Image 1 (cartoon, rainbow, N blue to C red):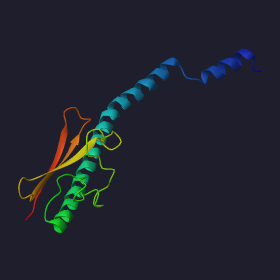
Image 2: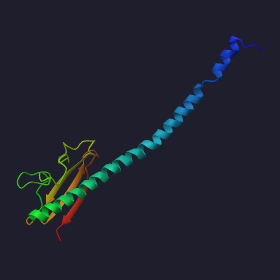
Image 3: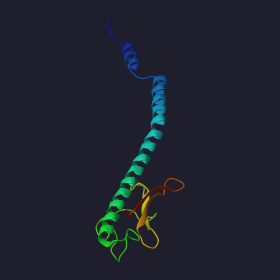
Length: 145
């Protein structure tokens, strides 16, 4: 039987998607996205905290090298006299040192060091996250043996 134009139109229409099929696919994709976005966000927050912890370890190593040379810890990470850890080349100069320099791209953490009073034989390095609602702090306290 020869194909009429009406039969050809029905065959091409049968090859398309119905609105119901399209809505089912969109719903499934939406449910999958709703389940994966929170876990992706948690993974990003954890990776930024891991980077901040690695930076604290780098600060500890730089403070230890500074101690071996000067027999004191730095008052802050960037100081002019005597040269601090950044000026002496022991730390990366792009390390955020205040809340205004902490950006989302740098993980939202800024770093500070507080030395012990008097003899300066202890220091506390702190990484503070400015994007996590109340500040999230990671702390590393070291003492000279």
